[in-house]
Image 1: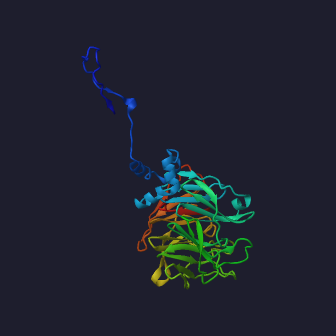
Image 2: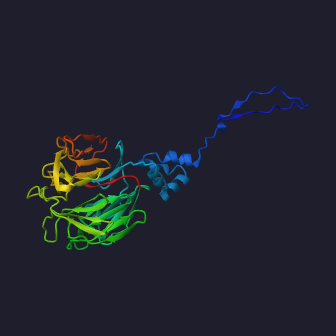
Image 3: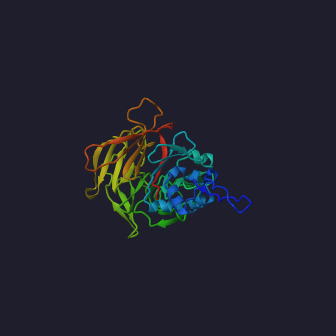
Length: 383
C-alpha cells in the first residue's frame, strides 16, 4: 500500500492548520516487477499454458517467438514431457503435458482428404511435432510448433518416404529407410537428419540394407534402425546404427532373433515396438504382450513381465509404446475392459534387474478417445 503524506495547508495568514493524518490511497497502488523476475516466474508455468500467456503483453510474446523462453527453461533444467496422439476416428491431434492432469485438442491440420485418411508417421524434434504423409499433390510434412500452437507445412524431406524409422534427440530428429512415397515401389536405404532450430534437413550416409516397416531409436549417442522388410519382402532380424563420430553405419546381426516377427497369418505385423529409457532398449512383444529388455553385450532379450495393454489383438498396430524420460509409456486397449472404446494409459519405471514391473495407470479424465492410436510422439520439452 502506498502512503501519501500531506503538507499542512496554509490558513492564508502564514500559519498552518493542524497536520492531517496520512490517508491510504489504494487506487494509487502499483506493483512493478523487474523484467528478469517476471520472466523467471512466467517460464515456470506449464508449457500447455504458454500460448495463453502470449496475450499478457508484447514482451512475453516476443520472448516466445524468439525461443528465449525455452532456452531459459533448458538452463533451469525444466523438463516437462508432452505426449501428442492421434486416435482412430479423430481429425484433431490431442496433447497431454506431464503429469497429465489435463489434455487439449490441437488446432486441426488444414490438409486434404488424402492426408487425413492416409497413413502417417510422426516424430518430434525440439519444440516441433512433425507429421509425414501424402496429400493429393504428393508427399508432405506438417509441423506443429508447440511454442505458437500452430501448424505449418514443411520443410519437406530430401527423400520423401513412408513406413520409415525415426528417432529424436534434443533439437534433432533422424529418419531412415521406408518406402518411397510417390510411387510406393522403391524401398530406401537413405537417411537424413532434421534440425528444428534451422528447420532444415541434412542427408546422412546410406544404410547397409534397404528396409521398410522398420523402427528407430536413439541410444548411446547413436541412431539405431531395427527390423523391417527388405526389397524381397523378407523379414529382417538384424539392426544397424549410425555413429555420428565416425559418420558410418554398423550392422548388428540377429538383433531380433528372440522376437517373433509375426503374430498370426491373418494379421500383418507392425514395426517393432521399441523405446529407450536410461540408455536401455526395451520392446513390447506383440505376440505375448510381454516387456523385454535388450542385453547389449549378449545380443539377446530378457523378459521382464506382462504389459497391461492388448498389443496382440492387432499385431502391434494401434498401440503407442514410447520413452517418457526415465519412464516407459504405453497407450492402448487395457487387458481387462468391458468398454469397446476404452483408452488406457500406463507408465512404468523399468528396471532391467528388477523382478516385478510396477505399472501406474494415468487417469484420462474427460478424454474419450478410441483406444486404437494411429500416431503418437513424445516431446521432451527441453529445446
